[in-house]
Image 1 (tube, rainbow, N blue to C red):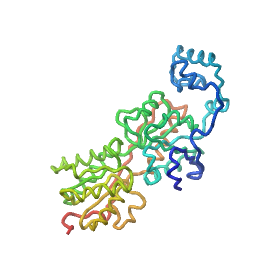
Image 2: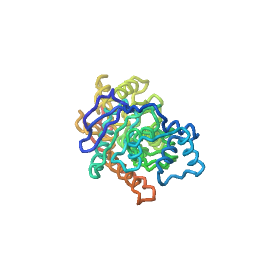
Image 3: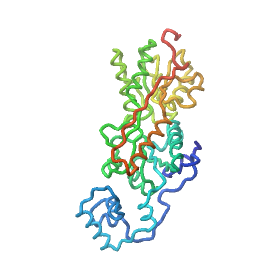
Image 4: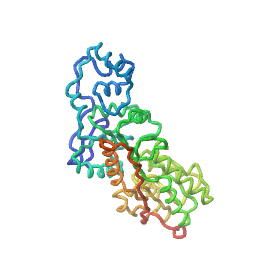
Length: 373
């Protein structure tokens, strides 16, 4: 996947046919000064989403007659004239779906995202649908606002925080959406792997090879669902095997190689050095591996190290990385399929959540404790 300029975060990237075919600035369409839908919403005391549903006569939305009349009165009193192009787009099915991705500052270095988008592209191309890739960050506009700006009829969310208020708005309005990650207690359809179980399996693999002093570097802050659950799996495996969990053996990455490097330096300069380290994803593991080498240690003779994701490069490192393989392309494809099911007017049931399998790819970055020097 070509790498657009990282400084262009906040722009949407159209995907379809070719993986990336254009970018455009958010908000470049400048309307003349006139009454807007937001003006109508404020005058009527409702959300802009409600105004859109009422004025476009959107089917399947439970809006009371009193609310509908208030919106119509407000539009009439203010002399609101809808943009005809926008009205036309709202009344027809578009050929685009949005992919909204958190942690936008590392969007283009996260190989997992590239593989997910690859899986999405394989599916949307069969249906002649475009993807609009939208990096989002804390404090950005609501997902519904971004969906309107990007003219998409449904969205796929990646790395969404469970406490994200923008997610609440999507759920409340019933806007078509799918999450690629497990979000506890949320009704939005989800495509994910068992991060807790997979992490526990990886740590138990290390325990089975004789390791007792095992550290973990997460791939992201624990406010992100996958990071939190992989950390939970780490603690569960230690507890189930009667092993000590030490605070100095747990460090937090932020999706980048640099964070893995810094975290590994802290671990290895601590009061007690582990014999094995489990890193929350392969990208962060790359930085951790370099830190080990810069400190004059060898993998796996001095330290066993494993990752999570099974990125393309992991098998070609020196030594090749032991990692938890997950079907990133399959997750992308399944998410698109689930969203298209929601958009099908003939379907009335919510698509089922999809849980995909994982497995350990054992390579040369780990060895049994007895084989270490």
